Image 1 (tube, helix red, strand yellow):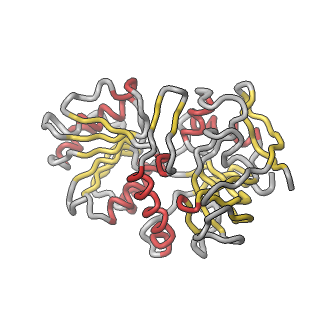
Image 2 (image 1 turned 30 degrees about the vertical axis):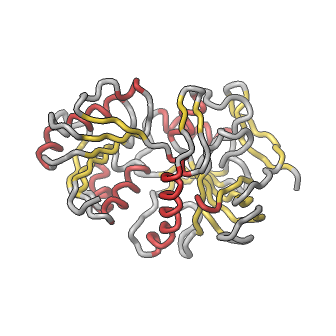
Image 3 (image 1 turned 120 degrees about the horizontal axis):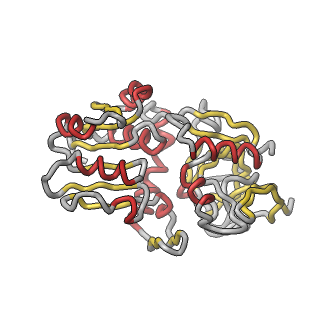
Amino acid sequence: MSTRPAIVQRNNALVRESLPMPKLEERQVLVKVFNSSLNPTDVQSFDGDAFGDGAVLGCDFAGVVEEVGPSVTQLKVGDKIAALIWGGEIEGLGAYSTYCVADERIAFKIPSGLDYATANSGTSLLVWGGSSTVGAYTIQIAAMHGFNIVTTCSTRNFDVVKKHGAKHVFDYNDPDVVAKIAEAAPDLAYAFDCIGNSISSVMSARAMGDKKGGVICTVRPGKAFTEDVPSNVTVTDVLVFTAFLKPHTYKKIYHWPTHQEDHELSREMYSKIRGWIQEGKLTPQKPRDMGTLSVETLQRGMDLNRKGEVSNEKLCFQVSSM
C-alpha cells in the first residue's frame, strides 16, 4: 500500500484525499488508526489557519502497530497503542488519517479490557474546568499525589469531578465563585486553567487573593488571554507537544524550544498510564461516538466544540472504516 485516505485542510475547508504513506524516523512506529478524537486545539488550528494547506489535523489516536522504525525497542508489530501527535505541524501527519506515526516514547499499550474508544501532600490546587478532558486527568493525577483539589465545572458534572478526586467543587457561572474558592482554600497559590480564555485565567488568579507568590498555568499562551491577570500572580503556560524532543512553532508567533525536562516527564507519565488504568486510578473520559471519520462528521464535531456543547466527554471517530 503506497497511499492512505486522510482528511486534509485545503483553502480553509476540509476535503478527503489520498496521501503517501508516512516514512518512519528514529523511535517511530507506523500505526493503523482505529479511532481518533477531537480536541479544542484542532478546532482552533483549523479556524486560525495555523498550519495552512496540506495540514492533517488530529492529535489523539489509537490503533495497532503495523511497522517499526529504526531503534524502536518498546513496541512491536501487533501492539495496540494510544499515542499523541501535533496534527498539522508536519504536513500530512495527523490523527485524521487511516495511518499515522507515533513516537514509541510518547505512546502506551492499551490495557486489556479497554476498547480503543474509551506536590506536597495537602497543597491546594485550583483546576479551572475540571470536567474538560485536561481537567479530568489533572484532577485524577493530582489526587494520586495528595493535593487538596478545588475545581470548577457546570453543576451537572459535580459528581463526576468529585469521583475523580476533587474535594471542593464550584459552579463557574456562580457570581460568587471567586469568593467561595478563596474561602475553601485560603492557602491557594497554584491554579491550572484548563479552559484558557481571559475570563478563566483572571478568575483563577483572583481566587488567590492579594498575597504574592501565586502561579497560574494556562493551556492557551498569549497575552490577550492573560493581560488582566493581577500582577501578584505569575503566568506560565503548558504545551503538551513539548513532550517531543524538538522545537515547535505555532502560527509563526509562538515558539517553544526543545525541552529535555518536559520530554523526560512525559516519558515517565506515558510509562505509567497503562498501570494507572488497570489499577483504577485513572478513568478515561466518556467517549461520544461520532461515527465514521469523514468531512461531514469532523465538521459536525468542530461545530459542537465551537458552540460549547462538549462537556465531560470526548468526541471520537471510527477511522479504520473510512
